[in-house]
Length: 212
Image (cartoon, rainbow, N blue to C red; front, side, top):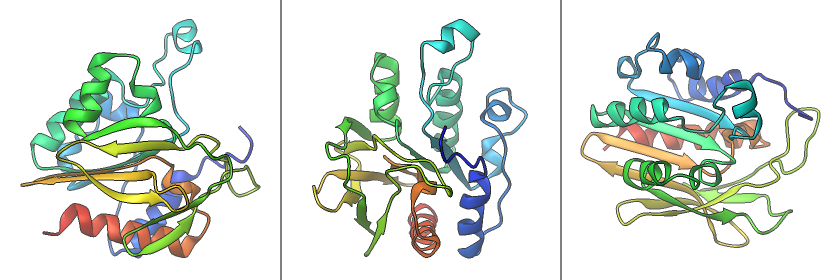
C-alpha cells in the first residue's frame, strides 16, 4: 500500500503522550485470544486504518474485518464494565453492513450508523472540538491516502462531534452514558496531516472520554 509506514501506534502514542497520558500497544489478536485484557486499561485506542474484509479472507482463513465477532464481544464487555473507547478508520461503517449482527453492534454498542462514503474525492477538511484539521486523501511519503472516508450518523443516543467541513456530513460520533463512553471517527486518526492538529484532537478526545 503506497505510503504505508506501519508506525501508527507510535503516531497515536505521541499524541497521547502530548496529552499527558502513558500508553502501551498490542495487536488485535492479543486482545482476541485473551493475552491482553481490555479491562486493565481506562481508555482503548483502536487503530483500524484502511482495514476491511475481503475475498482473500476466505482463501487464507483470516478475518480482516474491522470488528470481528470476537472483538465485538470483547469491546461490548469492556464498555459495559465502564471502559472508554476511541475507534478510527476508513471503513468503520462500510465494513459493518453485510451482516445484521455487525450492524447491531455499531448501532447498539457504538451508537452510529453508516451513511456511505464521503461523496467528494477531494474534500479533506474536518472540524470539531472547536478546531479544524486536514486529512490526507492521497498517498505521500509520510502516509497512505484515505480515498473513501466513511460518513456516519449518530443513533438517537449518539452525538455528532466532528463533521466534514464543506459538506457538513458527519465524520465522528460520540456516546456518553454513566461510565460508558466511546467515540468513532470515519477516517483514520493517523491520516491527519498536522502533528499539532493531531495532538489537539487527541487531547480533546481523551477529555471527552474521561472527564464529566
